[in-house]
Image 1 (spheres, rainbow, N blue to C red):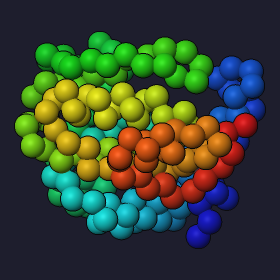
Image 2: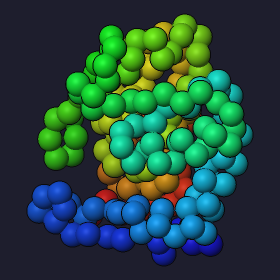
Image 3: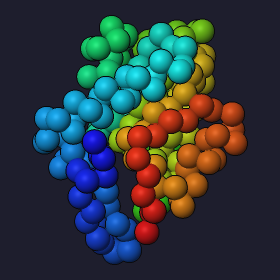
Length: 175
């Protein structure tokens, strides 16, 4: 199954000049969604981890299903002020603005090895911030799995150069 066939491209969203890769067309197709989860689960076997984290919000869709299949704890990496207890926070740059993500301080214990799952990697700012959250929580990043890599925006390459293991299911140009 070619998952690219299930990704809708929307020009000038969320702002002019961005070509948005929409995964809603993939997740509404039960065969494509199931195949995506199976592929993520299979690729995760290349990594040693004891918890799964996902980046808000589309990462939750994929990571929660993988977490259920693998019977691993699931950690939410959320936007600022969305978590009710004490948090670690990391500010970062997006390709179209600034943001902050947070994790509950009690979600990751010293020595935990965390697999981070998200729908897409572009410039890598969000993924890098997610790694920093894991590391300031005294955990270790086991690796990343993305459904889509926008290869010419170099986010995946940057993560690899920082020593992280990175997997993606499909690739598109970023422009």
